Image 1: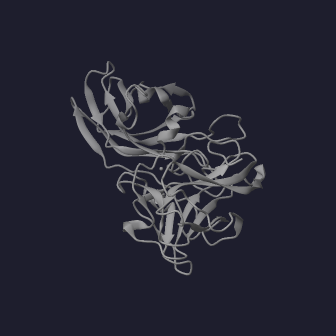
Image 2: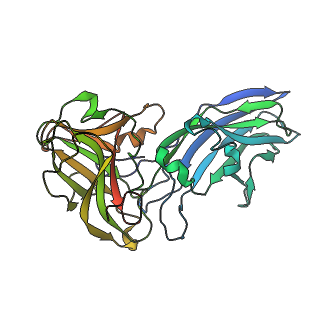
Image 3: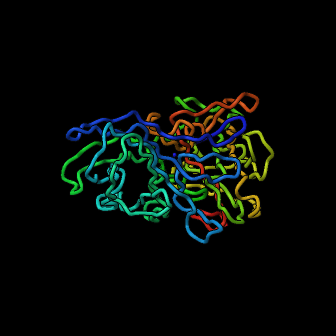
Length: 354
């Protein structure tokens, strides 16, 4: 699951849902707002939507990220009895048995800050709005990493205290989980090998640019070590002209670059790791720096794997994480509907070059 062009700031995303109403006896309980987003990850950012699964940070834990589900419940009269609130998710994105009850991953945060496990019993009193806040602050299990990024449909359900009778269910929101930089943003594209959106053929100097926002980077000192690309040449002589890492914007300062004439295998066998001289990023800068990996084509005979996605499922801002242009002097455009399999590698992470 936030993103960028121009200033390259991560745009806050919250999937705000229409009210859902179901009558419970004489009282009417309804969700008037529900959103799923993430805790702030960058000095300059408002809370984005995407939850980063694992990432080195100064707390010494695999993630310092927090998924937040918040909103408002309303009733038209006092509900004397307690209700039971839980979270449901479409678990078809996981393998059978991976996750049985998403509710148990979250905590209901009470006004005094106390964290109560879900499912949680709640008395809706008094009449009117009841703001709520639900949080998850734990890393996603490592076995899920090869399947990221994921967009998981999620909703809240209110039942009677025994959980037998449904009172009201919210519409769905998208819970977007992405990996840290170097842990496979495009590790499982599962899509066609393409160069530019709509099947366009790259000409000399055509470019793809993939953003690694500060929210995906480590929160401690790290080094940029390389780039991994999932792609192939259509014949043995096919090549890329260059792979560069720019800071701030796709045309910003070049931080590091690979030698020109980079060959990808003529038969696709996996990711090609392109090693860079290490670039140290001090810990004091970790929360503010973000980078673009820019690939320049040398001809129209090299393909890079891409993951098509459903625009209505993915956070609108996330759709601008990948840009393209037909020539190096033209303006970049958003590669809507495609997520290219290019990874920026950092030391100590999966697929690291060194």
